Length: 563
Image (cartoon, rainbow, N blue to C red; front, side, top):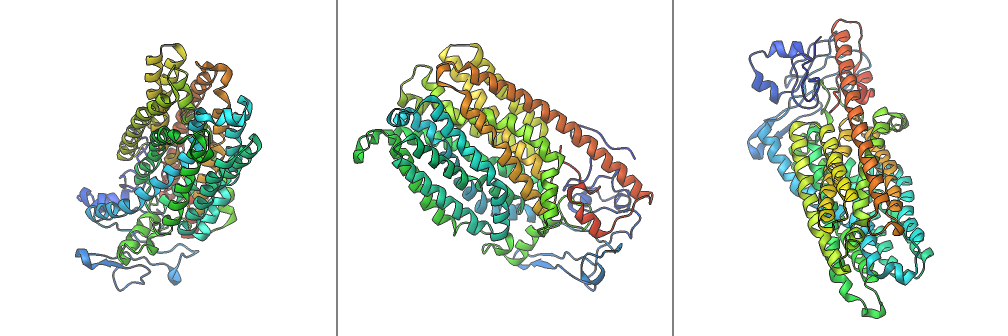
């Protein structure tokens, strides 16, 4: 069997269009209906009964109709005793609704989900990085922090942040996003508010530990939450929109810090940094309370969806990435947690993540200090961060849009790391303030724009809800430990040029590009091996039951990896 090679690698079924090389029976049956083939996903497990559409007289486990839109769609499956049979069963096709119906439904949920999740992450990133603004607004001077003490306060955040990622995602899966996300957000808002009362290094250190614990669940939780609403080929753009809130947080944080800094002296607080923590913390608490009524646990519980729309969303995700009507496992089992921990793709993603997130946090935590080191006053430095983050936001959306459109991730990761590397290299090689400021644009655009692809490539290539929730938590939790590096490389003794920190970021960008390229090659090889397994199934050398195929998750020969 020969695979069609190209920019995206072997054309395996990847939750989009069946490829004739992989699904000859389906293609031969519909040889004159290429347009219909794009709207109907299906394939044949060789050595088993051929797929067919089940009539209304068959055993029905799912049926949905959207009468309000004059659209009727019935998705029906048969198997022995109404479930997944342990023996080879009669498998049927999953037939997708018309594309226009799907697009209209996606627009509907986008307007409900993306603004809310982006707003939540904006506050999350603002609260974890506003210490960079507070530093140049009197925090270090008032608490008499040494450079090592300040850096340690930055570092300890990531210890508890990493430790609580997996438990948090499992809690979210158990109790639902509607309760869990507002709960953790409320508590980190309280911590943020109380941080304004810190009187010593020890108090600030403890507050940062508590903040990392409370914030740990949001990013991996929202990423996992989105995978329960969107297909693999749709997730990058949504993650990009969601993550662009981090760049808005940087710009908004600079503006807020500029304005709030003018409140120095009010309420007996000599410096503005206390007001930065207090005002942003109270705002987070209020948003946490409101978010309870803004979040739906799942499509089936969303009051703004009709039953047929909810079922359509569930089935689109349930059968995404599988060639037949054998969905990924949804139930919780510890073996799927272990699979998520041990999967080679998760381990590879960590090195890519470290190569991307460390330079990104270098921008997020130290950009105000870097700009101030160019000779600008504190208030001017706060304002000059805004254009840098605005450019990064635009780049993030553009990268995400084209990554989803091409259904490709690796090249965008490499391009982002490369652009970041170029920016840091320019900053390292010159002392000209204007050129260095321009270099921060390149570094920020590259760091922020490529990062959503790092998250999306793992979520795209992990099957099964429990395994995916675990994998996402490991990637973001353990990968987030890269922030501990960022917290300690831009040292006070290196100011104003910070060449040590810049060199570390350059090296990690190179590691990100290298590991992303190796991961791409490994995924291509894995896809070719899946093709070979399909050929063996076609020849009758291998046979699998529905139950076995479902339990394989993304290791199924019919689950194609996104490159």
